[in-house]
Amino acid sequence: MIEMKDVFKKYPNGVTAANGINVYIGQGEFVYVVGPSGAGKSTFIKMMYREEKATKGDITVNGVNLTTLKNTKVPIFRRNIGVVFQDFKLLNSISVYDNVAFALEVIEEQPNVIRKRVLETLDLVGLKHKARMLPTELSGGEQQRVSIARSIVNSPKVVIADEPTGNLDPDTSWEIMKIFEEINIRGTTIVMATHNKDIVNSIKHRVIAIEGGKIARDQQKGDYGYES
Image 1 (tube, rainbow, N blue to C red):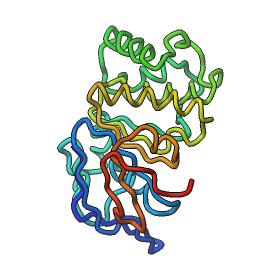
Image 2 (cartoon, one colour; image 1 turned 180 degrees about the vertical axis):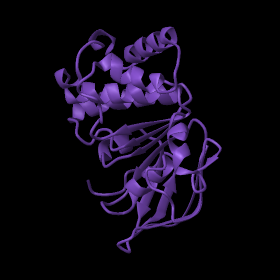
Image 3 (spheres, rainbow, N blue to C red; image 1 turned 90 degrees about the vertical axis):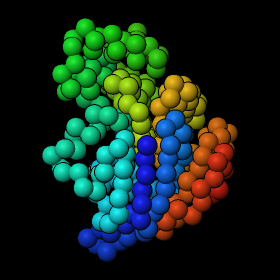
C-alpha cells in the first residue's frame, strides 16, 4: 500500500529531513506518525502525497512510484488518496456540499452519483443537515469534518492526515478521531501525523516515531513516547 525504500530528502538549505527511511504500511492499517518538532514528520507525510519529492530512494503508494512520477501526473495520482490538513483548506465562498462535491466534479463523475455520495459522506461525518451552509458559518470542528468528508468522498484506499486535531479543542478532537476510526474500520488505510499524546496513548494503533529524519521507533499499539 505505502512503501519507502532507502528514502532521502535534502532541502536546498542543506537540511536533511529524511535520512534513509525504510517502511511498509499495509492496506487497512492505522498509523500514527510522532516525533519532536523539526524531526521530519511533515516531510515524511508530504512525500506520501508528493507535496515533497524524495531526493533519493523509492516511494510507492497504491502501486505508483512517486519518485519517478511526472509532475503533470501528480493531480491524477492524488485523486486516489485523501489528504486532511490542520488548517482545513476549504473554499469559503462555496457551500459545504459544494466543497465536498468538488472532489468528484474534478474527476467528471455523473451528477446523480455526486449527489448520492456527497450526502452519504456528509451523513457519515454528521453534517448532512448543514450541507448548504458556508464553511465560515461552522465551528472549527465542523470545518474539519467537512475536510474529512472531502477527502473520503471518492472512497480512497489511503487517507493521509497532517495534524488533523492540531487546531481543535480536546472534546472536538475526540469527535474527529471517532470519524477516523469509522473510516478505518471500513477498510481505509490511515496515516496520521500528530502531537496529541492523549489520543495516541488512548486509541491504540501502530506508532512510527521520526527523529532526525530517521525512524527511531516502529511499534504496534505503541505509546506517544514524548512530552507533549
